[in-house]
Image 1: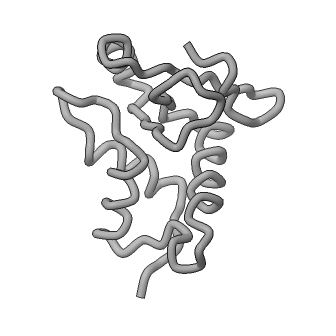
Image 2: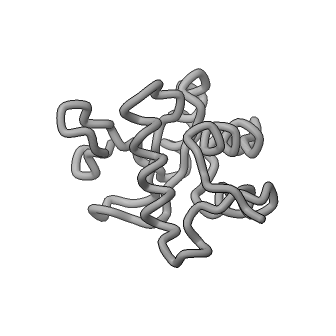
Amino acid sequence: MMRPITVEDHVRAVRECRSQQFPLVTSDTCKAWFRHEGIDFGELSGRAGKHFERVDNLEASGQRRLVKFKRSNTDQNADVAWCLAEEVDAARIFARRHGWLEIPWDGRRRRWDWRRAA
C-alpha cells in the first residue's frame, strides 16, 4: 500500500536524484522516485498534479530547502525542476547553460511567480 506524499518526501527525492552533472531534478524524475518508494503523489486518485503542487507550495512557504526552475518562457509549464537551496549557485550556472529559468517564490501571495522567471 502506498502512503501519501509529504514535504519531506519531495526534498528527499531532489536530494537523492540530483547529480553533479545534472543538479536540477525534474518533475518526472521526482514522480518516478515516488513510485519506486511507494509514495502516492495523487496519481492513484487522478489528482497527481494537485497533490504534488500542494506539497511543493508547502515547502516553498515553509523551510525553502528547494529552488524551482522551468524550461521555457511560457507562463506555466509542466517541465519544471528543483535543486537544493544549498546548491543553488551551481544549479543557476547549469540552468543558464541549458535554458532553464529560475522561478521566484512570492511569499506575500504564497505562490510561485511564473511571470518573473529569469
